[in-house]
Length: 368
Ligand code: SAH
Image 1 (cartoon, rainbow, N blue to C red):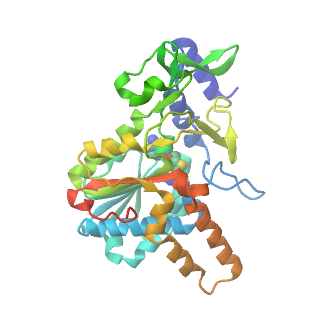
Image 2: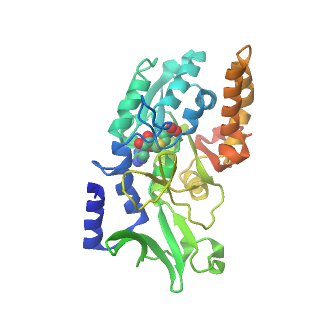
Image 3: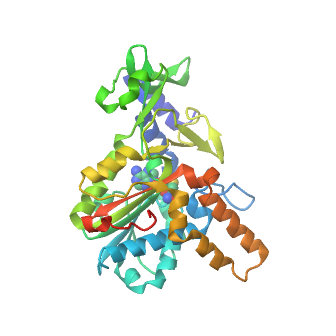
């Protein structure tokens, strides 16, 4: 049995079932055995000459994704009044590909590059190493931190792709006795889903929760709200803007979105803890409220497809393909489809932005 599972079993035997949030935090971020602390999550399938990853993210699909994010960052920097010094922050940078593409494109705006202090916020030593390899010929020095709060106070532009889904969430299940917290327990020597006594205040439930049938699942993610609040408060004080992209929904709803992914397929989240990526769909509604309550302005979130197309995805792909062989044009075409088509990543992924001062609120790039 793997050492993390032994540790999880001991915790359950001692204290009773673990919340989904605690189980997930151990699986993903355990200092010795966590999925992100030890693994190589992002990347294609394994081949004879390279270690495989478990899933592919938008920056790994095509350089155009990072280029569009660069366009967003440069426009936001100008909207902020082109501050002569600012933090360019990425939280959860994976292999570092997005930042690499972003920095390459922003050579087009030398004053932006000159003003940028690059920070990567990462909890994984293996991924930090990978990021430093990817960015080894970067135009700018890069500083790694584990905690976004330790970044010096100055105007900030922060981006995060597929980070929020990796922050812990709770699940609640409607029973005959009311809502109970779903949990991970032990039965007949195996990890199983069960419930634990914790309850959810009715005010924390959607208004129509009475009508939900027994067995309905509702998800909450105070860790995600806390993370967004921390950033929104910093932006409110220091000015700046943040961009979050993730799979999820714009309006709160019911449903079980817990998933484990390993080797490019779905896995059982209770088997071999620490060996698969455990996530849920992000509910952007409470995150948007959190940002606004913290004093930031924010446009209504949009789909990734709408966002990328509004920033010029199609034009950029057209330019890259001009006078290129048919094979290159075909690759670009598939990348554009994968990133933006409604039945691929285009609709499932949503984009949320917020920032300060209030004058940012006119015409957010990508949210037209
Ligand atoms: N943004 C990348 C990687 C997404 S995977 C991409 O699009 O390819 C999630 C990333 O978030 C990994 O780099 C992981 O190590 C990091 N991560 C997970 N939890 C984190 C936390 N609490 N703080 C900072 N980074 C975290």
